Length: 141
Length: 203
Image (cartoon, rainbow over all chains, first blue to last red; front, side, top):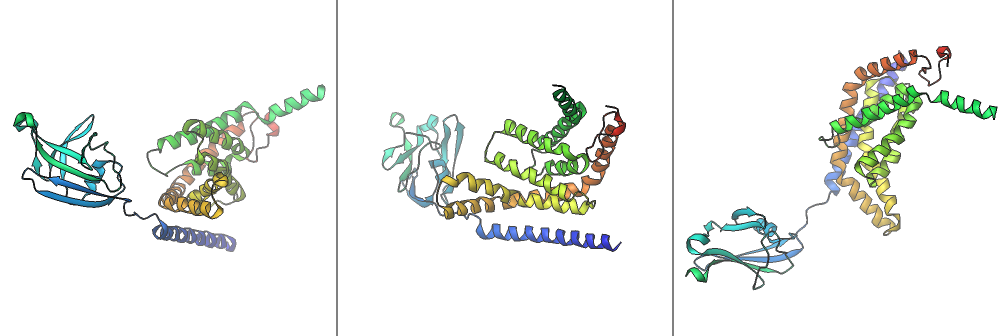
């Protein structure tokens, strides 16, 4: 009887020790876990709307591609249709283009050059300057 | 020559077809349970089964472990995690065997939970030694520590899962496995709890 009580006590101590160990480990996790770091690349995204007004977004990011960087840019909103080439951007900061109606589209530039890729595959490098410009096709003017 | 035949026959007696079937069944139970719970990260019944089989089926577990580990490797690939399986699961079996006289369900729940909690730390050893040729000792220690810390939430989930499953499943499954073992021991050539061949088996 006394032996059983002794064993029960040991098991109870073991259970408490296990709970304490779990709490200590949770503390270690909170203390030493990898914290999110500021992005390693600094970029600028400039949006030029139909009234030729510029809005600049400067941010630090680790984004590999432009789409993620655009998503991270505080205040910049955009949407469009998903296609096999990635998103075809139709609306930026609430302004929507319609190529079929008036030949308007969003032109994307990187460091002054027209982007060769869609936003899902356009690489992002440190100090890149992107410009997203409301453009109307010359053919439709 | 005659001695050789005698030795072979003796060997045969120590490993009858029934035991081989039993070992296969144990591995199957472990693997099926693992697949069934695969959608719940770090919730597993492997620890539960290994403890239970060690307690009730004795030496056969020594064959189950390598077969199970090999099957796991074949199914999921022989990665770093597989190396840690080589010593983690045998360690659990050794612990279960050391405390085999314990009958308290709480004891086994604590042991199983503790094993779950330490699982990441056990894996860290493999992580540390595999990279032995790369980087300085402090860099490897630091990388292993970061690896362990990153997995702590999952170790805690593992701990809670193991503890709870053992607490609720130990008694019902222990009686089922015990019954099967008794039934098997009743057949000719059956083995008692210590794995010794029954004298009345006639084989």
